[in-house]
Length: 289
Ligand code: MN
Image 1 (tube, rainbow, N blue to C red):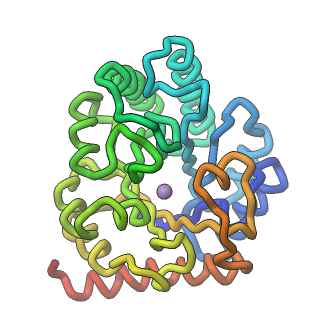
Image 2 (image 1 turned 90 degrees about the horizontal axis):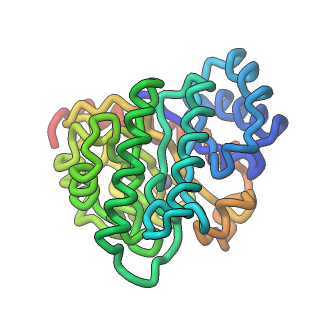
Image 3 (image 1 turned 60 degrees about the vertical axis):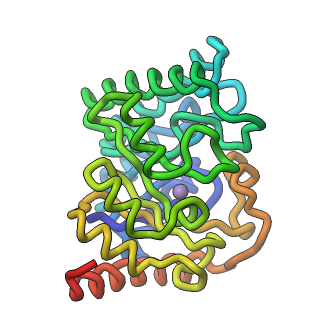
């Protein structure tokens, strides 16, 4: 397993300086992987990122959610067209960075929909993800669909719902991306959904229920780690935490980051790296669910 850190522990801006800073701090904190937000793949500075990555031992992954005007979870052909193009561009960027994972809410806007998803919108989204997954297969990039809570999408909010959506997508290169922050709201516990998702889980976010320090909240990480080991999960596990200390123009408002949960990203991230590695080690020592 690769243990990763979301770039928003370090910076909200991923221009050349921000990207290099996040890459360096993530490495210094002991991680194997940096995850960056890629909401605007058209303006990502690939020319700066590629040499920085080549000089770093870290792998890169990227997450995004669709925005107003490019929602493939809709019945509007123009929006769907823009959404498909944006997803394709993001995939290209990640392939150029030799990344193996593109993840997040790739299938929907990240906001509170006023109504349930329509059958047509669901179908349009699934078709867009199918085509993206096919292109991803050619490029060696896995398409990991993040399961988020009901206030952030209307398509699916649980592993079970995600598996049903994958049936509709019908492509082996699309998988499920679970996140403990969202599981804490929607799932019965941290164990059962992992067992149920088993071989379709391709990416994991660990975050506390308040999105601050790991272990300082209500999430059962011990159960999660034991369940992941039980299913033989070997993909990335990325630490995700947000504080109003670090503001991203694209992300902070969408995720409702209004509170200052920490000020020192270095202390936070180093703690998270140890917390995840120690948690996996102690879960492995038990060797039962
Ligand atoms: Mn997440």
